[in-house]
Image (cartoon, rainbow over all chains, first blue to last red; front, side, top):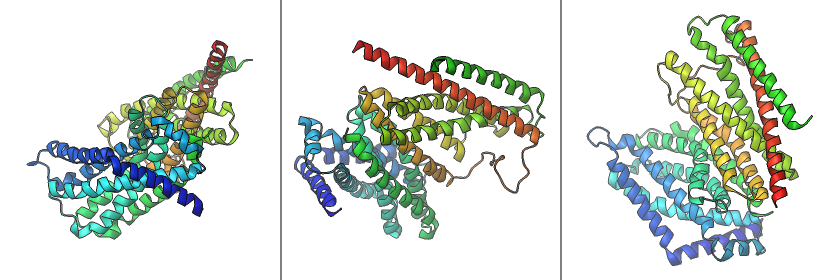
Amino acid sequence: MGEALRDAWTIARKDLRLEFRSRTAILSALVFTVLVLLVLNFGRDPTAVAARDLAPGILWVTFTFAAMLALNRAFQLELENQALDGLLLAPVSATSLYWGKLIANLAFVAVVEAVGLPVFVLLFNVPVAHALLPLLGVIALATVGFVAVGTLFSAMVIRTRFAELMLPVLLLPFLIPPLIGAVQATARLLAARPVSEVSGVLRLLAAYDIVFVLLATLLFPHTVRE
Amino acid sequence: MTLLRAGRWTTLAGLALLAGLYVRALAFTPVERFQGPAQKIFYVHVPAAWTTMLAMGLVGVAGILYLLLRDRRFDRFAEASAEVGTVFAVVMLTTGPIWAKPIWGTWWTWDARLTFTLFLFLLFLGYLTLRGAVTEPDLRARYSAVLGICGLVLLPFIHLSVYLFRTLHPRPIVLQPARPALPPEMLVTLLLGVAAMLVLYTGFVMQRIALARRREMEAHDLA
């Protein structure tokens, strides 16, 4: 177990170092996130609809799109120079490979969300300070769910035709439970409702995370090994 | 008898049952007091919905068995079940709005159960799209098994999460404790509908598996 986690960390570090050196993916993901927020701002009539009514939806549509972008990248970069074959030949288990990719993807999406949330607060003038901690909890729980399934699927779609289109088609139905939970919880938290009111949603998100991280860990070896 | 012929006969039996269902539902089942004749679509809609869920469940189970045993037959069955399930999902999603328009006054509403079935349909479409996008048979079988299993696990979650919204859909009326039950005449008609849909499902799946086998043989001959 300890060795598997160490291998996973090595793979995650490799991915993150690669990302840190080139910075293309993370920068474009950040610019993309800000652009989606801007586009969504012009998709409403500010005199008719208050920003706060739309805020949870806008936040989560943005995060969903940004996560999708990050996930497409995860295994795409292993296609160059048959890097994936190299990884599979290396003496690390497929489970470690999945966990490594999962950690790297989580870090990537977390950075995007860490920048996206303040920009969102700024542009839509939604106060979040009163519920910042529970909100961060909701974001963390939903993101783990997104990325756990997305990492599994992104390993499959790279070997299909139209990979960039295939990932959202497969992944979006799986994002519905965390998305519904996250939007409901965010709406209540932004409306300054007590945290106890969202405890059911938080439980659902946590159950989703546990089930799908375990399931993806079990299934991932079948996607990369004969 | 070959699988294709057996499948054809089963389908024929299913069609005969379906004709019987129409006759019984329209002529020999009492008209529902509040909804009038519009309620008759219930005898097609509900069995189709149940068959859709059964089909999705079996795709997942076949996926598990394929990954465990690596027997190509499970993959062929999963493919057939997914395609036939999509057809039943279309039946469910078209008969629903036809009923909803006169009864609810709207074709579609973002009700919990409607949303659930819509995502079931989209899951089927995603599954079939993935199958279409992978050319190598072993890879396709493994990928679709993984997706099928994930879909099976996803369903309870969608079910739970859409119930976070309020629901307008009629409450369960067959398996429900402590509420007046469906009158026996209507229940018999409903069960006849379930039988017709299940026999049709079986017939379609048998024919689809036979077709997949023939395709594989042709591909093998060409190679």
